Length: 205
Image 1 (cartoon, one colour):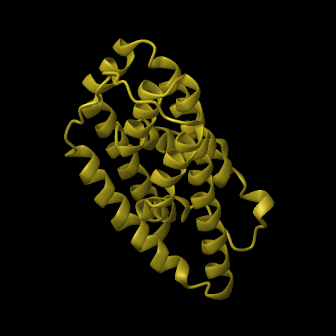
Image 2 (spheres, rainbow, N blue to C red):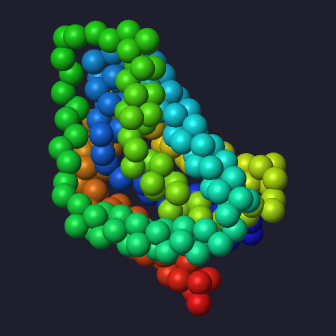
């Protein structure tokens, strides 16, 4: 994987994490109704599950291509269609209200870990997202040691982003800034997904 390819992968993973959704609401809820440590634990457990999805996807694609080499074309076609579908959804995505109001309830660190892991583990869209995103980069002839960045990149970007969110919750203005720029973030993500789909199409030509 070249540096440019890795950078494009990292940017899409980052924009996917930054784009507001259920995961950020879980981190916000744990931080505001528990503590900053709760938010940190939620971010770490969420990132670990994202890494697990990435690992399973990379290993699955590698084994599939190793035994059925011609499946690369079918995977690439699926990836193009799904990336364009995701891009359309991101471009037309609505705004999500991110509340910074605190309540009197308290949350344990165990609930923080379980909430963060569950919101990622029980999200099958992550598997489809990684399947489409990783298809151009997985090569059955290379060992996993040469493709480890495909796992480390989404794990690191997801964890770091939600750690930042947990830390910034002491300043509600930061989340207000994020909320006001949801549409811009979603459209940048949409354009990045279209770019990767276009590169896949060029590779199929």
